[in-house]
Image (cartoon, rainbow, N blue to C red; front, side, top):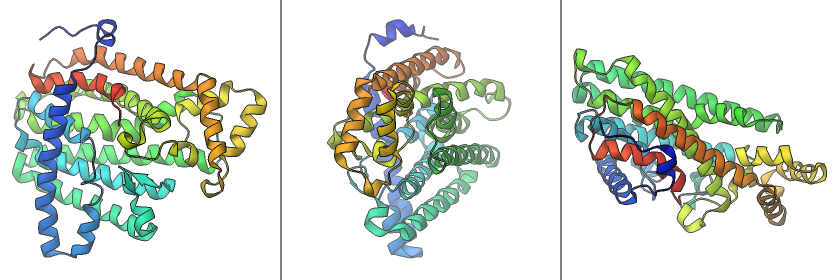
Length: 363
């Protein structure tokens, strides 16, 4: 196996952006082609206007990170792209269903450079589109029995059930904080929430599902003990991804980011940067910040949100987030060396480069 670069050496170099861009673009193209086929069939056999709405979010500009991880893990495990196509497409559908529902729950205004389904069509239609997207994803996964066999298809379904359950629990934790107006939280509370809400469906499940799809049959397949490091690796990479995503929400170029800059502050989301700020801010500043954060979005003033963002920067809260994201990315790189059952090829290299990409991306 090729020697893994130390975290210190790796931190001083940029990730292979060309390789990452190529794998992401190809994964997205493969999944969109499959979605085109699926939506065309559903428009022909079902209620066409519904599937026009289902196609909205997936065909907006996106990264395609989850399908790319799934495809790369499949090929690094010795498999072919077609073995992971159904699973990768289903993962993209689940992701978009989560986004539609998240936008309703958060009252979000923009998603991927356009107004949200909520804002364009209202909550009832948006909720139904999210539900229908989840149903379509499950329907696709049933087709895995013919593509990769019954045993692997059931293993994939088991991974998807765990992914969905963890994500729902993580969302419940976050919504509970908002409902209870809780800000007395530590970094560990945030990391537990993000482990459930983000890590499982962004990194852990795509990795494990990809390996299942591409692995050899029977006794040659990786054992549960060999797949266990994928949970910890996905946890570390997923936390780095989510913290960086929260940072982008505060300081990215809105045209590149594709979402509303500062939306997390408008919505009062408990990011690791905001929780740090609440802990370290002087009492008078913290008091004003909490009044702003607990004000309903519709009643918030732009000048107050701008003030809050500037105070977070002044308090070193954004630097705290950057440091924590780097720490988790470096720890993921160290854990990467335990995946000896994966082949050394471009896909294996993509998975390694992805651990740096998650904290260097601009959208």
